[in-house]
Length: 343
Image (cartoon, rainbow, N blue to C red; front, side, top):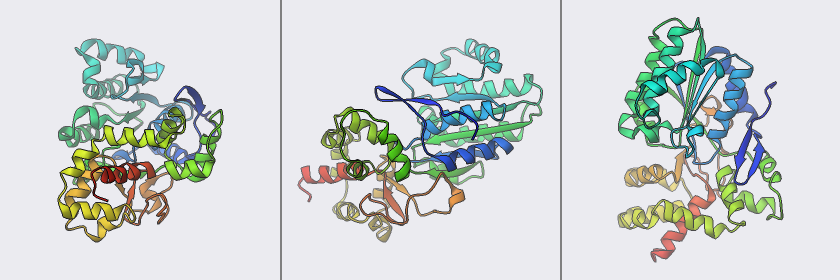
């Protein structure tokens, strides 16, 4: 790949994008042809979807001459919410100034920018990279928004050369909503492979635990690695944060006795959820909604960005059908069950 690797903030460090070679080849392939329909990438919280989109922006601009709009509605800093190629700067500024409270309505702003770029440029190549936009627009509007994006591909205001629309989400629940329609192709993305994760681990300075120990805690998830690094490698602090952030005490206390038994069994074998699918539907929905587990049974490679997880890895909590997003997500549930006196 000719494009240089982007620099990314990782806690108090600036590191270079590493690994994900297959995913980057897939970005290059969609750069060649565009996307049809909308592409949506789901994956565990913190698995690297944001980093992939930032690298994708550079690839599509430098190698394929796309005008790129990158939006991350849930970013804390305004300058991180929206970035774009310089050639469409005037259009972006025009739209931002014309729509009151534009950053609060950034999803609508993006639709307007796309439409104007298609209208005003001669056969443009335009790429739209949207990071966790579903959280910003609300789950009740997800379907209509994806349809609006598809309409810009299918019924543009003027002819374009290529268009690529790539949306990432940690919201596994939206998969059911969008999957009912033909409006998007959905792909999964998993945590980093062991070799790639070691590259990221090696970039961290100062004394640190052995790599194998960190791998068993994070399961290849860059966000968990960052939290471990920030906490001085204290896994208990990260687990406590997950328990509080996801309000696991309330979640588990609300379960029926049967659901609690299934949950306890799933700590040792995540496929217990599939074995008890009729009785575990509400439990699975809640675990998915809280971004604790992911459905992973579709392991055909063309349905994944980068590589799917291994067929089974009980140490990391990965089963044939369901997987804990990371070992520490599973540990947070285990710890909560213990605190409630259920194990």
